Image (cartoon, rainbow, N blue to C red):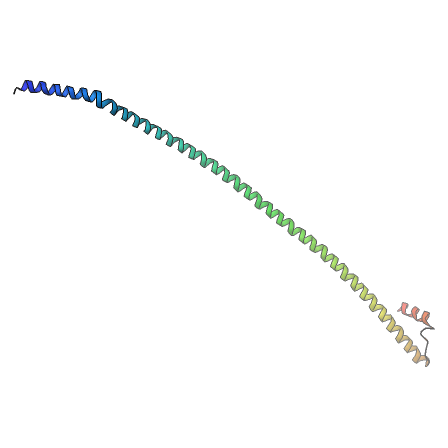
Length: 156
């Protein structure tokens, strides 16, 4: 065999291989590579969009959380105020009830004191009559001298 002929046959085979690769294999391979690059680019863009959406969602969630905390603090403050109002109302009601009870007790004490004075006056008038009986050595008629006894009791 001739080396020149082998070299030409190899060159023709190589050229045929290059032509087959260039026409049959290379275009689908490039298309597959380009599609893969597009999918990767779309995936990266989607990831960027997702990150932006996540950041925006976190920001919105933080704002909502701040608003909820502010609302909760406001509700707690209102509850404290309402509790203080209830306590103050209860205190005022207790004071009013205490004053009413005191007035009732004062009236009862006054009535008891008046009854005790009247009873004491009756006893003093009885003692005075008894003492006068002993002094005069005769019995004094209480009904007959009622005006005198009432005057004596009023002086005492």
